[in-house]
Image 1 (tube, rainbow, N blue to C red):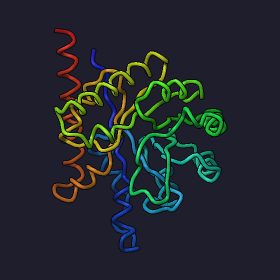
Image 2: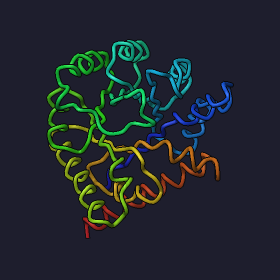
Image 3: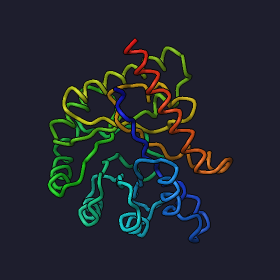
Image 4: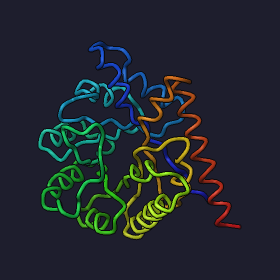
Length: 253
C-alpha cells in the first residue's frame, strides 16, 4: 500500500507581498485557510530574526485560528526557542539563518553544531513539539540528527531544484536524496523534504517511498498570482499523488 505523502504549504511569501506596502493585505492567515480548503496537510511559517515576512502577530493568529498542524521554522536562538515553547506548535523545524541571505541557502550543520543544537532540541521535545532539523542529505548530518534526538529530518532539495532535470549532476543529487531518505528511515527518523520544488521537479522527489512530507511555499505563492492559490495547491497535490502512485505501481510490478 502506498504511504500517503503529506503536503505542507509555506505561507511566508504571502507576508512578503503584504509587507512590501506595510498594510494588512494580503493576509497570510487567509492564505492558510485557503490552503486547508485546497487539500494542504499542514501550514509552515518561518519566523525570521529580522521579521522580513512572517511576524509575531502572524504566528499568534496561526496558532489560535488554524486547525491544520502548524510547522514553525526557526533558527536555533533563545528568542525563537521562547516563542516555540510559548505557542507549542505541532512541529518546529530548526533551519540555518543568515541575515543577508535572500532565502535559506543550504542545510543546517547538525554534525558540526551538535553541542549548540542539543539544548534546543531537548527543550522542545520535552514540551511535546515535534522537532525537525533542516539538513542536507548527507550521512553525517542525518546520523547527527539521530544522536540529537530529533524525531524528524527535512532534507534540503534546493541544490537538486537548481539543476537541469535529466543531467548527470541532477541524477547524482537525486540519488543523494534517495539514499538520505532511506538512511533516515532506517535510523527511525521521519523524513520530509523541501526547498525549490515546483511542478517540473516535484515528481522525482514525490516518488521517493521513504518521504512522508514535502514542504513547498515560494513556487505556490508565485503560481497563485497567475491562477489562484487554490488551483496551484490542487495541481501540486495531484502531481505528488500521481508520482507516488506510479512509483508504488512500478515497485510492485
